[in-house]
Image (cartoon, rainbow, N blue to C red; front, side):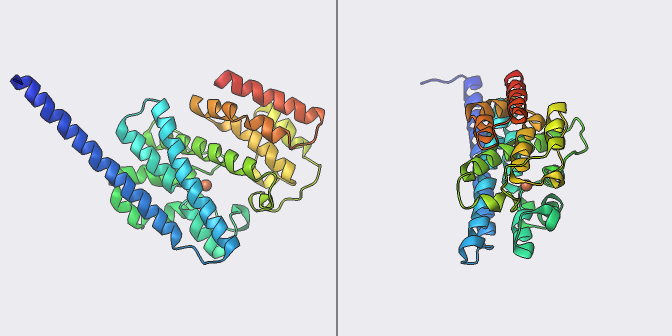
Length: 277
Ligand SMILES: [Fe+2]
């Protein structure tokens, strides 16, 4: 077969692109393996302790996948999608040291895991995988992924943070709804009392569209209401569609008391999702 000079140079260019992409995929795989071995260093051979470490390892891997899906649905460049994946993978890097030192994931009773994570990431072996600009964006994302509010601007750090905040919530919906009927429910609700009560001020704030501060939760029902409130902090259409597909609002509400307040919240949140998806 005869090639023109142009066809020949186009082939060389596309081979070069393919090769570059393969190198980047290998680098991401290496990063993922490094993250997995990092988490394995925290295993102690004690079942409850190791359960928690594995829970966060698997959560991080799934958040990274969600970040990739959101990036794809937003048509981001491969470079931005790769960085979104990395941010998802590393967003909870502070959780392992937090659990080692305090034996809890409850920030209010220990340390802010976003702040701790950004300190850890800064001097870690993971830093070698990123340019200094990428690292700056990742540190911002890790620090602010768990804050009630964060400084927004029109830059990549803000975009990455919004992606991770959505992806994080999507996977926590999975974790918590799977645990509703298991013995481990207390672990993720920070042992809040499992009574029939819920706080009326939390209901009122949801209906006003306000974000609820975690420290206000008094019962396990309040925790579930806070999860419904998260929907109002989601940013991307992919996330609303996912929450809708998985029927999370229905699942969460089915474990809450059958009252007119809960019914009103359910209707309000379902309509909100419908509008955004
Ligand atoms: Fe987190």
